[in-house]
Length: 89
Image (cartoon, rainbow, N blue to C red; front, side, top):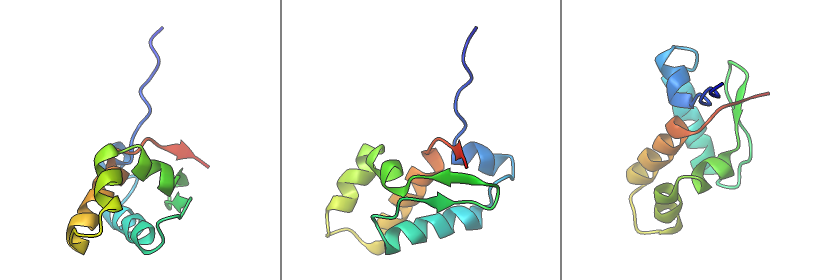
């Protein structure tokens, strides 16, 4: 029996379970406090903010540099959040 794939934030966004505004809020929360460990959504799903970024090698590399614009860094974190697998609280 094949195991089911773990849904991502992006999957829940496409199903309108998680709103785009919530993803942007999680992105801003992470950028405002990078060691943040818990990014919670109204639907009850939770992301580990540090793990979300560390699991995305590109995001990790870009955020370690201080030369990139805030908009570019925001886009990279937003993409990392979209690609993150979900856990339910």
